Amino acid sequence: MSEIARPGNGKIMRRLPFVVILTVAAIGTFVLRDDLSFEVLRDNREALIAFRDANYLGTVLAFIGIYVAIVAFSLPGATLATLAGGFLFSTFPGALFNVVAATAGASVIFLAAKWGLGERLAARMEASDGALRRIKAGIDENQWSVLFLMRLVPAVPFFVANLAPALLGVPLSRYVITTFFGIIPGAVVYTSAGAGLGDVFARGESPDPGLIFEPAILLPILGLCALAALPMVLRLVRKGRG
Image (cartoon, rainbow, N blue to C red):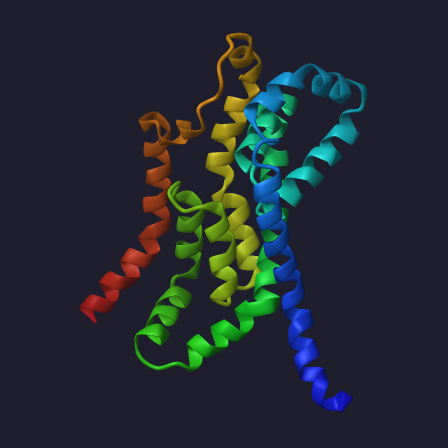
């Protein structure tokens, strides 16, 4: 009897981490939606700066740990955390802390999704016939370009960019590399904005989360998107000629 139960138990155990993440994400979105706001950061800025000045290393470790949890469990507040990184640590090393923490958190949810669902789904897509298999083959052929584009294009939600590669069978190393380098432009923009939060709060204002869509910022990022897409375009051109 126990022999028969093992496969089912194994399937449950594989999916458990992903189910836990989704559950925490759902609860956290409901419970924390009013607690992770610009007002909270503004009202506690003096205490945060005092704690940082008294214990810099501890503040860095606590900040990275909180940021990893926010991303790993898809909790609200990732943009606020990125701004806080600039507010507490300036543009550099704040941007580095932000990128490392976001990459680590994204890797956690990637592994949970890949372990629980991704490997089986990718195998089914490989074994399928017709359009689904062709889509999977096209993505596999252009993985580097697709992954970088998912990170660079501001319109792609971070949660989607974290999960989709896991469900398509992307290797962990490739995912980590493209995540780390792909989020750098956006992270630097928001970290730099966070470094100026002191002046923003002094004026009684709130930072603009949509600043990445300003032409002076968006156009260079779109240029990077075009550069990331270039190998894919060239490959399609060669195929067309062949």
